[in-house]
Length: 119
Image (cartoon, rainbow, N blue to C red; front, side):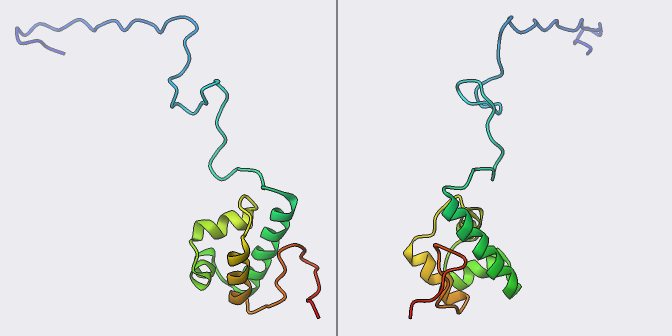
């Protein structure tokens, strides 16, 4: 860089970081220094939620629908459908009823993919 007098300016020396310093807090680490999980990698809430999510995925794909289309049919958000399918969020009674109506399947049982309809 040239200063106003026309003479080259000497580059400034940047001091090295102090020994033992860590990355700033918001740099992909938790307060305790452990790394954060990547987005969308939350584990299933329970084995039942994971099984129900797999059932939703199977039924949705059988209809040829996207998550967005299923969300429109159910009156839910696409993110809510994604969470149910991954098993991260359990589907409440209202969501289960909306899914059963969207799939036009009154036997759409959230507890077991192999459950038989009540007689």
